[in-house]
Image (cartoon, rainbow, N blue to C red; front, side, top):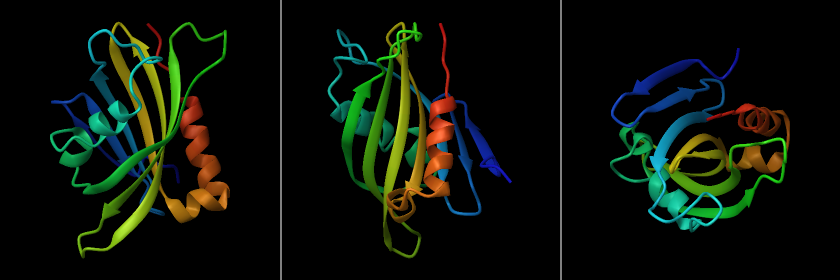
Amino acid sequence: GGIAKSGQLDRATGGLQYVDQRNGDKLYVLRANLPPDTTLATVDKKWFTDVLFDPRGGIAKSGQNVESPKVLSAEMSSSVALQTPRKRVVLKYSTVTSNGLEVERRGLLDCYEIQGMAYMLLVGQNAVLYKKEGAERATAENIVNSFRVES
């Protein structure tokens, strides 16, 4: 079991991708420079969709065709135990399958900032499974909650 059924390291972007062959959930570990003069707390939420789904980025290079990405929520962590700035983002987007079907998805993103760089873990899940709030969503939330980056 487990989500790490197959993986690939993208050396050009410093990204990592895993696919759960059971249900199609995808996990991406990515990094990107924050725009100049911004922090994780001040960056526009559209930056997340722009950088995550950039046609030249790791997700697009993995063969995912993404349509209509949108940030549903973005909140900084209020935990005083965390010394590194951390933000949780929930995304809505669709992927297009090889036979042209559009599948609505949700993304749970955990993001840390270290020296102007954003380190991100994204778990993408079928929107139907996400909305059910069952075991699959709990697994996705546990994966995102376990992500740690420290300076």
